[in-house]
Structures are given as C-alpha cells and as structure tokens.
Length: 210
Image 1 (cartoon, rainbow, N blue to C red):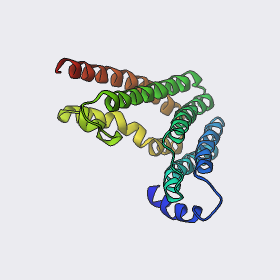
Image 2 (cartoon, rainbow, N blue to C red):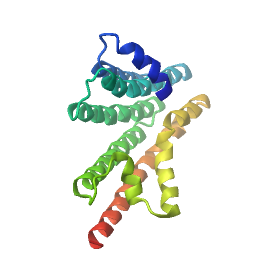
Image 3 (cartoon, one colour):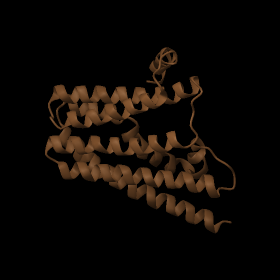
C-alpha cells in the first residue's frame, strides 16, 4: 500500500484535494465496510474488504500528501486521526458480529480493541513524558522488550492485527466469519489484559531500579 501511495500522492499534490479530505475518505471507507459486513454475503464481504484496503491506502496517502504540500499538523491531525481510527476500526467487528448473528462477540472484540489501543497510547505517553531519554514511537519496543521470549510474545501480540485484512480474506473465502468474530472476541480482550499486565510489571520494575 505504501508503494501504491507514492504515485497517488504525486498526482494529488496538483489537485485541490487536501490531506484532511483524504483522511475523511479513509474513515468513510472503513465505515462503509462495517455496514457491508452486516449483509454477510460473500459478495458484500469482498466489497467490504476492498473498502478496507482503500482505507489503508488513504491512510498512507494523507500523511505523505500533507508533507508534500507542506500542510503538516503537530496536534489536531494526529488527535482526530487517532480517534477516528479506533472508532471506525471497532465498527468493523460490530458489523461482522451483527451479520453473523454474534453481535455480543462483535461488541466484545470492539471493546477489547479500543481498550488495548488506549493502553498502548498511555504507555507511549508515559515513556515520552517521564523516560530518561526522549524516545520516538519506533523505539518503544527496544526500550521495554528484553529477551527472546518477550520478542516471541510481542509477535503474537501484533501479528493477528498486523495481518488482519489477510486473515479476514481467508475467513471470507471459506465463509466462516462466525468463527472469525468468535476468535477475535477472545483474542482482543486477552491481548488488552496481557498488554496491561506486561506494561504494569515493566513500569513497576522501572520504578524500583531507580
């Protein structure tokens, strides 16, 4: 998607389309996908998945376009983008849950996703605010992850969401979205609880070694 975004950014910088418009498009595609999943037919599900891919493409384009036209924002764009990302992504699970008849699982998965994201953001804020050195978002894992076992657990923590669209495609093709939403309704809350406990222990250790 990043490579596909390069030529698109080059074209869009000569048009009246602003980075904020692209950001809105990203969230509209995600919302549209969540509504399409409600119908739970393979045709609508594949169209919904295409909308998710277009949303990801827009997500790569908006930041690059903002830098290309020198319209970067230090606060408001990141703030709004983060809010909409979590809300619209959570809607996907609710839509799948409604379409498959497992609406409770959809809400549980959505809640686990939003709660887990909050814990991540809190961790990032604490490290950047109170850390001994100024670290960037890409340094957080190097700051807190120690040993091979923790690295393996981290991959298990990230992988199901990193390859979310590809996992979703497989379950759409085999027409087993009911199993998909059940699995993620278990995984995402456990992911949130595990992350919260892990970071708590890490921060406890950081407090007591000073």
